[in-house]
Image (cartoon, rainbow over all chains, first blue to last red):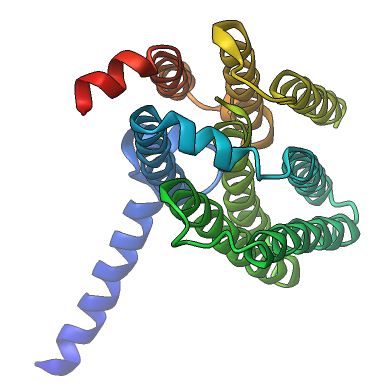
Amino acid sequence: MTETAAPATVVIAEDVADGEAADWGPLSSLPGNPMMWILILGELAAFGAMFIGFAVTRALDPATFDASQAQLDRLLGGVNTMVLVTSGWLVAVALRRRASGLSHRPLMLGAMALGGVFLAIKAVEYGDKIGRGLTLETNSFFQLYYLLTGFHAMHVAAGIVILGIVTWWDSLENLETGAAFWHMVDLIWVLLYPIVYLLR
Amino acid sequence: MATLTRTWVVLMLLTAVSMWAGHGTGGLGPLGVGLVLAAANVKADRILTHYLDLHRADGSWRAGFRSLLTLLGAALFGIYVLYPMIGAALR
């Protein structure tokens, strides 16, 4: 009985695999892996809720928030935005070159290096704040500052690892999926920077 | 590739505009808040459309993401401009 069941299981598994590839419903028209788009939607919703929470918390204590925000380095935050945006551009160009059968690895390595520069600048910022006694326990602004930027920095670190993996195992689908994650990290930062560093 | 490079230039310019609009001390006022949020919204839309290739998807997806970003931007604009009333109501 076991011997007859095994081939049937294989056939069913193949059918399911074929079905999954073709049956993403409305998600099918999205470029790249649909699972990545579900992640992007989820991350946008999660960070969007945190941004609204940040703004409402500021509305309750604008004086503390504005005085605390003035301690941030707006220039470094802007430079980091440019670093991440440039890294995203390199990944997008690398993906096009891979699709055209051209060399793409130097661009991917450049994108990862810029991701490292982003984290290094973030570390400099954290070092400066902690050195001045501005920590998680200082006030609600710095709690949210470390929470939001720290959570995002974890995504950047994970993104660098993912870019490394898809640069090594560089099928077009892998590269598309890795690139989508990296652009999501970029997308979140271009919203986070003005809210945490600039708006008042 | 040219579209990607144009997108990158737009993103860099809008970042510079945000940095200029948000520099200095004191409140930004409704115009400044609106300018900074509009720049962020356009940047996010450009990343979705060109870096994430959303222009290849159904129009309903593009409209959905644009609506989500616009809703978020409008909510933040309202909270930052009306914060004295919101703070008083929540206290």
